[in-house]
Structures are given as structure tokens and as C-alpha cells.
Amino acid sequence: MRMLPMRLAKGSAGRLARAALCSALAAVVAWGGAEPAACQQSPAGQRAPVAGREMAVTFDDLPLGGAQFGGERLRAMTAKLLAAFAEHRVPVVGFVNEGKLYRAGEVDAQIAVLRSWVDAGLELGNHTYSHPSFLTTPLQEFQDDFVRGDTVTRLLLAAKGRKPRYFRHPFLRTGPTAEAKEAFERFLAARGYEVAPVTVDNSDWMFAFVYAAAAARDDRETMRRVGRAYVAYMDEVFDFYERVSQALFGRQIRQILLLHANELNADYFGEVAASLRRRGYAFVTLEEALKDEAYREADRYAGPAGVSWFYRWDFTRGRRQVNWREEPEVPAFVRKLYDGLRGSD
Image (cartoon, rainbow, N blue to C red; front, side, top):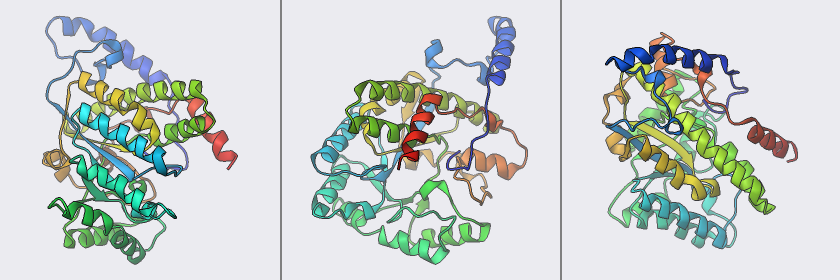
């Protein structure tokens, strides 16, 4: 769940209770019973990979999320990120904020960076021009911002005989009301676009903010600490959303992961991808992931929060099948650093 005024508190009591229950069930498993999904250990606990899992990976805020920079630094970051995708054979869709391309004296260079994604065989989607919140932006203005963000990306894809197909809402806010949400989705469909859902939401942006600040002051120790904490946190995130998938659908659906284009992921996405491989995931295209019947499930959530589609489905069913208080928290030291940096802005 993202961009809420505050997160729900989560203590260790639930995890301890779950651990005690799983320990009690160990004898049942030993005698041939099935291990409950909630009791399956993370890779840190040496759990065996589960075959058949699939993950589509998407990156938002191209060409660069967070604090902006250009030149060789941006080219190097992008090259490192694209190399990680190639090494781990990940067919990424990158969602573009075209307003970020228009840096004084660097427009051609910024567009060249974006072109490198297409040259690498990756797909680009629309993430609006200026990343406005649909919560506070009137429908017509939001549509206009979409149209402004559908220029360079379309031209770059056309050069490869392709066209943009997917839209990602900024902040995952899909509309302040059901009427606005549905009107915008009709607008998208008329232009040949499909909404790109997210099941595996997370706070990589917070880690990246702290990481970038540490990089700016050449604080390599903090960079390493934040990077390691990020990889461990993402493993907890995968655990959580696997349990959610099991609770809502009784199986592991094809998941869709949201991350952001930044130096943190340029340096650590390879480790995140390796972790997913160890968990038994194969990487699939967004198109393939959306063939899962789960994405035909109704989503009637409209409101202030930017949330995972799992949350939307749980909300729509009205059965409260998921304990959202168990969603992993960002480590306290990262949040403290983030809050301190934001306070000094």
C-alpha cells in the first residue's frame, strides 16, 4: 500500500504466532500433509523453490525516478540497469514521464537514454507527462496530461514497428470516484491502451531516496547498508504477496512487480532478480501475466490510496480475506533517514 497518510502498525506478535503454529504443524507435514502457504519459509530460511511461479517486472518514472540528474551519470545508471535485465532475462516494461525529458540543454541526450530501452528490446508505456495525482487532478486535465505524455514514447516505439499499449497510474491512484475511474478507463480503451495493474507493491522509492542522498555525499557505508536492507525487505515483500495470492485465489497467480528507475535498482536489481529465481519464479512479459484469470476480477476500489490490485480485489469482495497489517514495513533506520532528509528540504 502506498502514499497513505500513515501505515498501519505491525508488530512481531503475528509473526511469532504464525511461527508457533507452523512449528506445531511440522509433524503433520512430516507425515505427508501439505505445508500451509503461510508456513513456507523465505530463501533466507533455505526454502526450496516452488515451481510454476511467474513474475512480470515493470519500472516506473523513466528515464529517472526521484532526484533528477543527467549526462554521463544517467547514461551509466541506465546501462547498468539494462545490463541487469539482459543478464537475468527479464522482459521489462518501462513507464515514461515524458516531462522529464525536457531538461535544458539535454533533451536529445535524455531521449537517447529512453531510446536505449527500446534498442534493448524492452517495451515502453505511458505514465503521464508530469506524474500528477488523479486524486487531485480533474479528469479532463488528467486526460490532457496523458496525451502530452504520448508523443516521444510513441515515436520511439514506431521506429521499431511497435506502439504503446499500457498505462500506469501515478502513485497507483486510479481515480477519486468510481465515475472518474471508469471514465478514464473508457478514454484509455478508445486510444488502444490497457491499465497496467500491480500486485507486488513496495516502497523501493523510499530506499532509493536515502540511497541517492548517501551517494551524493559519497557515503558508501550507508549505501551498502541501505542496499542490503532493500534486498532483504523485498524478500519479505515477496513472502507477503505470495501469502496474499494464496488467501485470495488459492494459488500463486502471475504476479506484476512495480519498481522505479533509479541508482538503487541499477546497483541492486540483479540481486532482487536472483532472489526471485531462487524462489522459483520465471520472468514473463506483462502481456503474458495479464492472461491470468485473476486480472478479470472486478476492481471497485476508488479513493485516496494507491494500492496493490490484491487490496482492490479484497476490498471489492468485501470479505476481508487478507490481514493488511502484515504488509512488511521499511526498516526503521531507513525510514528515520528518509524522514530526516525530507525534513531538511
